[in-house]
Image 1: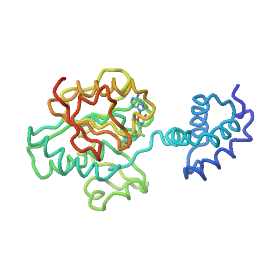
Image 2: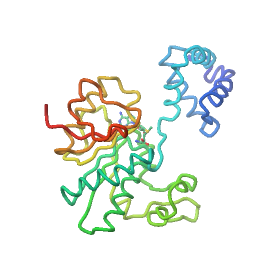
Image 3: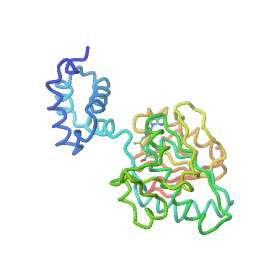
Image 4: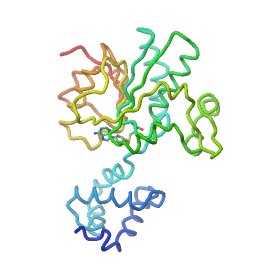
Length: 274
Ligand SMILES: C[S@@+](CC[C@H](N)C(=O)[O-])C[C@H]1O[C@@H](n2cnc3c(N)ncnc32)[C@H](O)[C@@H]1O
């Protein structure tokens, strides 16, 4: 039995308040059960057995704040997350690929509720509207079938969509009677959502021009990250692009597999097989 859950719930509100004040994450915006499961996963990792003990641990070990933040925001995503990275994808990477061939193949790995692949699909749809010869397909995968089911609907709450520019909303979304927004069919048609475990070692698609795998590997061991980089290398076409999250990095064992293209934005190009 884990003390403090749910038999001894007394310290749970204290821990929640500490997180809200320290990490500025509004725990009350989430279902209580979700928050408890995330705390329990950190308690297992820190060998603490009650909410109170974990609270004492995190106070004494500030380094625990970052894994705790990540545990709480595990599926967090947003449209055009890190705008400058998507600006580079729109202005440089995708035009470079389209200069090579008229059809682009993209894998968005760890896509969560879909904001990242829909952002890529909106970029493609805008380019395809300008040039009818262009086409593309995005395979979007995640291990979590709950977020994938949400992603497939293409329906997003107003507060999420309102962060986009009005012109983007008008071009790519339909306002529903509920007040939510649904991605238009021609944008949805560019994406195939599929369940996939990045630890499986086998890519769901190959001969790719671009892989985005952003803000996913935070819990992966160094060895798992290296295996992932090898899998991405094998799944990319000659000189294909690999975009990581801003706080992620390539391990020393595998950095020869990729050549930096834009270091600040963590964008790499596949190197020839060493
Ligand atoms: C923080 S979200 C990142 C979403 C998006 N890429 C972004 O940057 O906004 C991380 C996603 O990675 C997924 N994930 C974690 N481990 C995975 C694995 N082994 N295989 C596939 N997806 C995984 C999670 O389910 C979650 O939806």
